[in-house]
Length: 317
Image: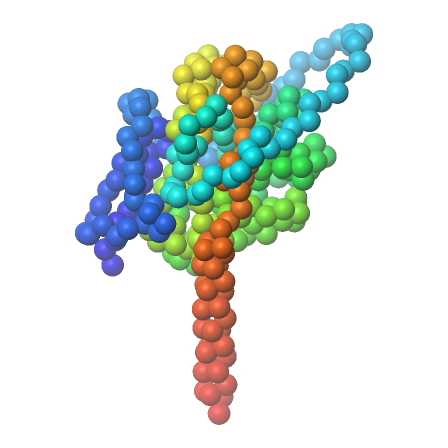
């Protein structure tokens, strides 16, 4: 069957490829804007193979003063903003930035981000693939931050596939399996926020996700430039260029390049007067309308199961 297919070209540009007539995306998801500097874009892939960490150099012990108490990190948003569309940037005007970090291939990088958040009070959103073991390895530092809401865990599918290549059942399974593992690890739900791998989605993917409880797709409008193995110079250049008010920034938990730059990025945030927020801080929880989509889908699925059961019993007779 012909359908419209909206593909997000992963860093800063959006392009629409239409096959046949355009079908409106759920919740008005068809609106698109051209993002600056499209020439710099390239698709983002999850790393393959065994994650590795750079060898740490031993350092001599030195006397140091007592560390200061870590700052208390609180949600700075008094009232959540309404959710209206696929989000590439934070709605409205302000001095906020949503620093989002994807995947999770490298345990050292996962830990570095978590320790950085604990030390500085920076609020982050992790769009994770729970197939990686990095999160379980670092639960000691992650769990308190997740429980407090300082780090939000959102859904990026279990295996990071191109969802356009999967059938309906497989698409749903990617979200559901990831959610189950997130619940096991952290005891919190990732619903309703998700990011489709590579930024690829279409009407079908959005509808399946919404019925599974993931009704809030989040993309981005700027990157730290660490989607692949790169240099600190590139990371710092990209971050300086795109870390601006109301941006949703994209980073990755896959390479160690950014670790030594985290403090410098915090300085940049402070210099620009930017306040970090999680997506849940800014937009809150799912609306009653979104929850109804899930309930209706569950009722429909239950009805189908009952019909199958009756049919089997009938065939036995």
